[in-house]
Image (cartoon, rainbow, N blue to C red; front, side):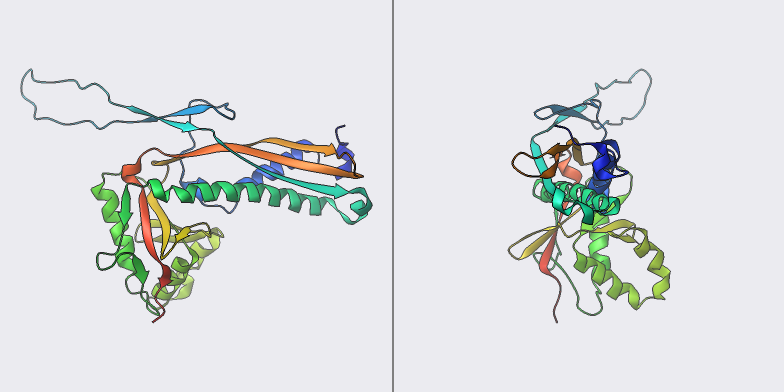
Length: 292
């Protein structure tokens, strides 16, 4: 039996569906850097989405009657909708008097956030499919100097150089990094000028550290740590990793065997690195900032 919309006060299913979707999108940085544009707008579990990627043209010296017309060599990469994740919770009638509309809004937002966090983790795991591994030339992985963060510019400079060497398209360069990188930025710029000079950047987004040395820097708790390495991601926004995700089911129902309402949300989607040659695995020492 479907639940009455009156159970949630002013929140109808259509409204709290939007609340769940808002929670899916907010404060998780992976989506910001992904390509989410596909010709096929409607899709379901098991579908394959086609990602068109433009081939590279060549130039030649011009003389009379020597023009050769190249065939376009676009490649068709495929993203498979193969992941499913759900959130479900119950609301006991006996506790109904203690639950307000505002409380339910927070719960629905958190449900969306938990689904979004799953997709953020999937995106960050794509470091393993990157075609470039960025490492400190003097060591196996990047590590930021303690107290001064003096080698921070070298890290940002290397990312820009590596993208140019890979002939990445023009656009906003990004770096998704663990929280220690934000600490390193604070250490470095703290000695370079008034802190207020950078305060606007820090205030824009909970996970946005700012634009430094031409690189948009985002902070994520979902960077993967394996052994002695923590893996960040870098590249040009919207050019190397594709994401398709959505909440396809958001239901309220009366639970069997309980005097309670149940709520459940199902998210499906897929993630694909379709241009590995311009995606960077930023290889950081798991102790990102040196202890001495």
